[in-house]
Length: 572
Ligand code: ADP
Ligand code: MG
Image (cartoon, rainbow, N blue to C red; front, side, top):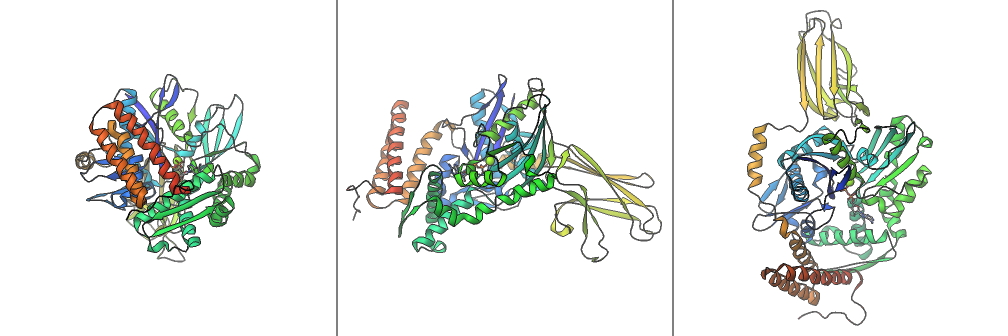
């Protein structure tokens, strides 16, 4: 049984596997390596995942969701038609779809995976990711920081060689920056930093809003579908701007009809604030590591948003270093997690590679605040960026005469006051009677690479108590109960995925066009349905190509207008 590696992205997800002594990406039903992390529920309750679901964000915004990775572990609920899902349940559909693709590709059952998460993910978000995997029928013992994965995907360093690498991962939802050290066969993360609220989506939103402003439209007055359409167009234009300029952005949707010429200068002017925010985590990561940027050997840019020329020039100018080109920005992380999955499965093959991880946040306990008794202070035991596995001890003493017990509350976070950090759990320990300050309590924290966290407290007479926090574990019963419910919801059959993508695309175009263009899209959809009804695979494949070509033309029209003299008349 194979173990696969999964890059569960905010925008796109990929799977990879170690086979025949090398790492391979796993294609989805449409033959693509990237599956959009989007979910949509059809009228009959079938769950759509991937490109078809992404299309339906525009045509059926109230039945579709994307970007839910940003809400992992928050308790937010997403309403999709008649159903309500947590972010981890939506993620579990994406994972289920990747798992099915992998099983088809490998011809065997897949029940275990290594999944990558942003380095900045806190304990609760990591736990939610593991729950998502459990709900998709995947056992996940190891989560891997995405930037570590990206670094692993590149070339190994030679003997006696040491390299300091900065991984700048700019995706759809987050920016992750990390410093990775490679020394002979050891790959270790030195420090991580990032911005969990900065990604391609923010550029799409900024472009869409700036478009409205420049064209005299009011964003707040638009319908959800119009906004979805505008965001879609903004993304298309943003991607186009990465390779050519100017680009015409036009939106014709219901009452609104507007167009604007976009240039990289316009983009820089409208999104300057977003571009400037990129450098803060870069600065912070060097500060945390206690190293000057001049010690950097390699700069690696990954993530779709790093394809923007402004991002590349901004960062390489900031660091006075050209990015290394051999890392594929879209697939580096998946390749790295695939390698890591291989390490778990065939330790032999990859014996020469040792991967350490780091704890991306500080773990500590509450202590009394003498100057402000009402506000408990956080006393760090394991500091942010400690190399895992790690075990550290802190020594504390009683604060009251004849205190008979201590209550130890454990927190995670970087803030001075406990109230501003995340509460993880508590334990209690009795102490022998004595004047204040005369009894000590030793608290040891142990944290391993698989996310197993143990806290142990010992008093002066050797009595102890411990607390085990294993992230992501729901009780078997909880998983089984939720699994049963989710299993009632069927994923759309994989064999029909490519056809469903075509119809979903047609439905989106139908939703955003008017007049003759809309009429023609409708006709194409009818014709395509009729071809599918023949159940002749050759006919259907040919119809798919025809429909795709036609929809390409409609997209071009939406972006650039019809070629001269072919302006369609409105139907009356
Ligand atoms: P994630 O890690 O969040 O899943 P990806 O690394 O797949 O994301 O990046 C997706 C983001 O990259 C999207 O916001 C997309 O618009 C953006 N993107 C992809 N290609 C380009 C491009 N050529 N120019 C600018 N942005 C791009
Ligand atoms: Mg990513």
